[in-house]
Image 1 (cartoon, each protein chain N blue to C red):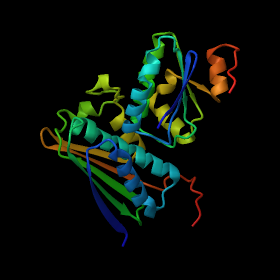
Image 2 (cartoon, rainbow over the protein chains, first blue to last red):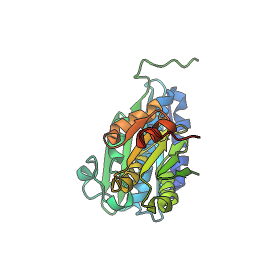
Image 3 (spheres, rainbow over the protein chains, first blue to last red):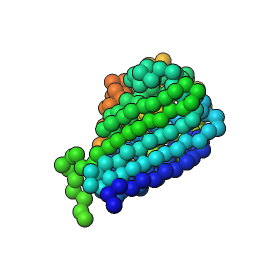
Length: 150
Length: 118
C-alpha cells in the first residue's frame, strides 16, 4: 500500500493549531522527510489552520477538517484544510503578499505567501458563505542534503 | 510561556520552540505593559529555542518594531537557526531589524560600547 490517508476534525480554537500541525507532521514520517521538510509543512499547515480560525470563523466557533494523503512511492504529501466559514470574496486579493483584511490585529498578510513558499503546490477554493478549502502538496527528497540513515 | 526580561531601555523576548498565532498573540498580550513604558527603545528577540514559526511571528516582530521605531529604537534578532533564517529572510523582516550574535553583542550595538553583563 503506497497510499495512506487520514482525516482529523478540530474545533476552531487557536490552541488546536499546534495539535493539527503535529498530527500532520507525524503522519508524514512514512515518506521519510528531512527535519527541514517537516518544519516547512508544519509552518504551512499552521498558516492554513490559523486562516480558518481567524478569517473563516472570525475567531468564533466552527469546525475545521484536516485531510492528509501520503504516497510512499512518489514521496508526496497532500494536505487539505477545510472550513465551512464565511469564505473569501476575492481569492486573488487575499493571496497578494502583505494584504490582510485585519491589519489592526497584528496580521502580517503573509499567510498564503508562506504556504506557497513552503509547499510545492497550493490551490484555494472558496465560496462566500460556504467556506474555504486550501489544498497543498509537497514532494519530499528534492534536496540532496538528506543524510538521515535507515 | 514566554520569557520576557527588561533591562533599562531594553526588552529581551525569549521565544518558545514553536511560534504560531496562539503563542504570538499571548506574547503580544504579555508584553503590552512593558512596551507601554516610553523609555523602552530596544528589543532583542532570542530565537535560540525556536524550531518552527509561521507568519504570526512576523506579525509579532513588526508590532514591537513599530513601538520602538517611534522612539528611535531598534530591534535585534539573535540565535536563529537555518530554518528560522529562511523564514525571516522570506518575510523581508531583515530590512527593518538587525542581527547580532548574542544578547551581549545586541546590547553593545544598541548602546555603543557599554556591555551588558549577564
